[in-house]
Image 1 (cartoon, rainbow over the protein chains, first blue to last red):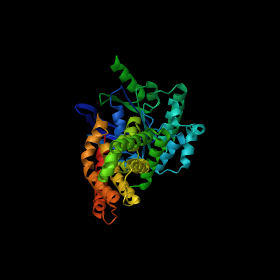
Image 2: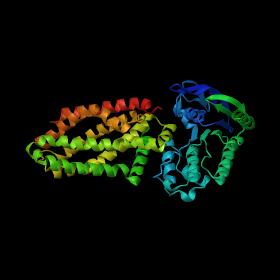
Image 3: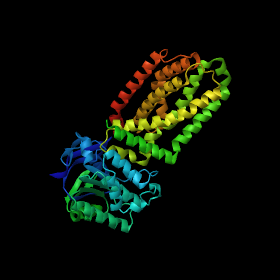
Image 4: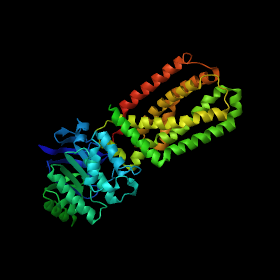
Length: 225
Length: 225
């Protein structure tokens, strides 16, 4: 069974067509790149898969569940790391995760487990407002993994991270892959795309190319010239 | 509706508010100042015509409420965390109920400070039961909170939302104000008991119930992007 199936997805904002007939599928444990320049439709695509935005037409399935007809069930199987960290700066790292764990109905022991896993156990009682960008990103990943989603959506996950932060992220994503978590990574960074097995290149909301990251990057480079 | 989710959302908002004190301190300051101003300007007239006092009290609540109510959703929208709530397997009704509960607790806190202040500064000749007047005010505030929370979700996407909220809210609150002022007036200045204001109480309950049902039914569409 595919972890994510997207079929002929279309979405417009007024007269602007953000996505046109986008189709692809992602296997379990696969890292899948969604490449494209700013405004190509990457974030819109991820937001539709996450159930934050409704498509005009087409179909999206997450772990066998249709996102439009069973949104709550689909959301249970999806985790998202967005541009914004989706954290409350006034709360501590632990309080943030406890809130999300409470809403998801996840045991509170998972909070400590995840703080250890992302290397923030020492900062559990520090307010998030005092966190660096890298620490917020780590906590954001912990937040997205709290309910052990089958699909992880990452929107420009390494933006704002330094070299060590990017290396940490790469290692973590490999680990999640081995555990069977499918990942959709929206990016315009070639290095991030290269860590994926396959992907698509979006241009003005259309799939301009699909296949290996090398092939996508060469198409992108050819069109950029 | 899952009450645990509602409680987690309200608890989180309270924790954020108690850490930042952005809304509560302004609400308390504004309402206390308003009471003092009204007492200075109209205190003499209240002695002559005690029936006008509940109207003044409601003016304080109305302006204070409008100052703080919209913040619960607006804060999430500004911080990007509204998406985090919507990406979780929770219904819009649960989010709205959580926010309404938080707003109610906030306004109840203001009520606990403002009501005694009002009685003291206005030098109101009280003939009836203060606890009954307090209960009427609490029920009215509950209705006010439900309506204002619901309307604040409707204006979230609007450009001039801070201006739009009071404009949309005022006509909806009119029946509530008439009922509440009438009941408070009869309790405070005529010494009416529960049975004497039964019709006002029944209508207040009905109004709160109908507002809650409409708010919950429209929440999904209101929170949809």
